[in-house]
Length: 126
Ligand SMILES: [Zn+2]
Image (cartoon, rainbow, N blue to C red; front, side, top):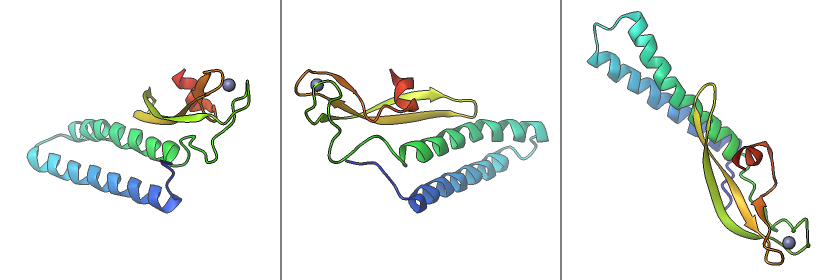
């Protein structure tokens, strides 16, 4: 269930996406041989948003999505929290849109629920 990836895995994922974006630009230019520099740049900027958004996802979610073993304990009443799954949300960033996800837990004692550990991304989701 943990979504953590090694630094090498994250880098490989990014490089694969960058390579796919470049191939996309080659195909686009083949299909638009008379495009001006501005038109090529505009298409590149459009594709860059997708690449950057994906890179942020890889960097943030691949590093830590808040899933812990053993599970964290309820800060209110103490028992280990129950992992409910991952919740996803979209962050519209300056460079691109990213689908972030965070481990979501509930307490079997008091029914309290939340993300763990509550980080800045978790706060953005609430
Ligand atoms: Zn509790």
